[in-house]
Amino acid sequence: MVQDKIILKGMEFYGYHGVLPEEKRLGQRFVIDLELYRDLQEAGLTDDLRYTINYAEVYQLVEKLVAGENYDLVEALAEGIGARILENFPVEGVLVRVQKPQAPIPGKFSWVGVEIYRGADNE
Image 1 (cartoon, one colour):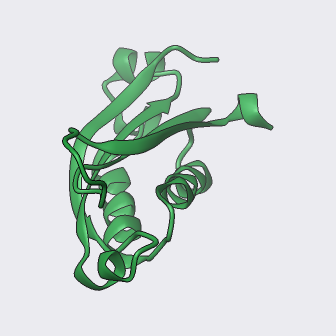
Image 2 (cartoon, helix red, strand yellow):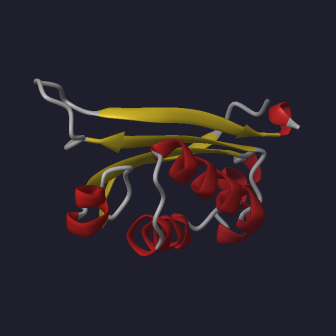
């Protein structure tokens, strides 16, 4: 696996994901972290955007999925994000972390969520 990566950390969006009807009706904040694995040497040597990934485009894609689609499970949201990244960008792998800070759980916690890796190693 390539060790180079582009990191997008702490992207916050408002979405309507969850199993409970209140989650789908009221929505809540989601925090997304991504690691996009790709050889970045050519980009570093040439200073040319063609050899890397435009992270503004990645951000827009993730925003569209989190804010515009609905999933019951954060696992499904993470899978959707990972699949779209792999379909639309020249990456060898992607790590997706979905955090749900206001999950409807009685008790004190920072967040609950999932983390998945998808790419050449999973095929």
